[in-house]
Length: 140
Image 1 (cartoon, rainbow, N blue to C red):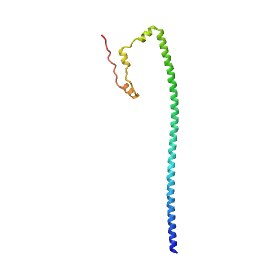
Image 2 (image 1 turned 30 degrees about the vertical axis):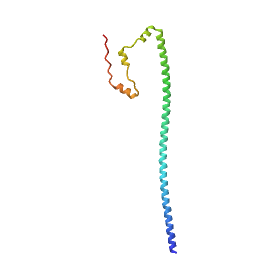
Image 3 (image 1 turned 60 degrees about the horizontal axis):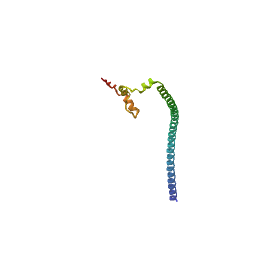
Image 4 (image 1 turned 45 degrees about the horizontal axis):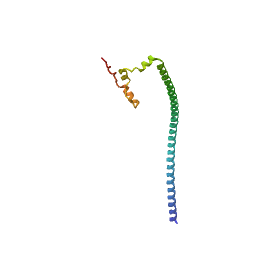
């Protein structure tokens, strides 16, 4: 009988030990999951603030772009009016028409020439380079 009692005590001890180990593992799993949940909540809060900032930036950009388009449209209207005025003046005034038809001197044409640029950085580099004026061609 004592053998049965000892066997039962050992089995109960093993069961209690196994259950306490499983309980310990469950507590560890819960702690890890709580930490993961906390980290994910912090990440979501960060992403949420980034999205809010991005939304504000997008709204500001959209407003600025709308203003830019309105300004470009106004400039287009002013340019068309100016070209129309120039055409009207050229048609009405013979002296002005003759002056507009006169070819520019070669030196002035060379001053207006510049390479084509595909990027703003290329243009800034070209501006910062030293470009001496060409020597005038003196005709005899």
